[in-house]
Length: 343
Image 1: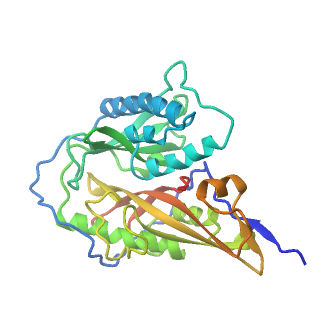
Image 2 (image 1 turned 180 degrees about the vertical axis):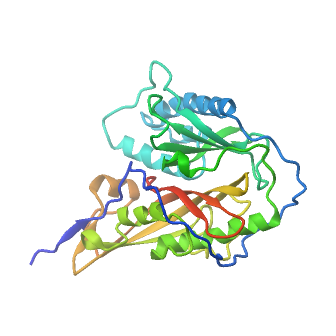
């Protein structure tokens, strides 16, 4: 009898986020991954719309140049380093490899690409609440004609020594789920940093196991598990084994130091901490009921797979999560985006 083959594909280009409606409070498991900071650190004024819009406009102009160089012969992947970092830079390598396998070209546009319209701005260009490099969260509409009720995208821009870099992009953000913009932007207290550290392992556990009891508004995480087929539908089962971005494979999120690293960006907004958690996810895909799984041909070439049907395959994706962390209680998931594949 012929073997049944399932194509193990991850949905690309779909913002894996839904509005959550659950709420509640509860103690999160303790984590040793917190660094302390002096609560006496001076507060800085948060970034305003005009400042965030200028950062976005500058990025779009530089990104046009990178696209022209990296997605056309000779496919110079190093061009991305001038505009991106973190999970976005890792995904850029996938885009360059994919472009090199196709005949279509991506010439630089004759006129500048339109910059997304900034609706909300958080963070600061001076310093961050958690003591890292300054970073700005610009929540914007890609289409200037979109209404304020439409879903937006959260762009994370980090101020490196050589300029601003896009570090994360999270789609399907509902404006009403965001905290109100606030000034000034104080440094986090030791307790607030610990609350952020404690949120990381419970979120990673929710992604891995589907147990959402320790997070509020878990719909975006449920959507992610559904899209990657963690529910054993479609003839295969995916284990999403995620770790904080930048840590080695097998890192235990419950003991990893995440506050003060690239895996977690924090900014204080009013009485809550707004956070962007970046995860590196290993997607272990197993065939069910005696079948086989197979990576799509183009993806197999990009990811270094032989493309043949097999009992299991391994793929890799980033998962970027926007959440709001109270000083006590469950972290609230605002949106999550797992659309960036990594070769």
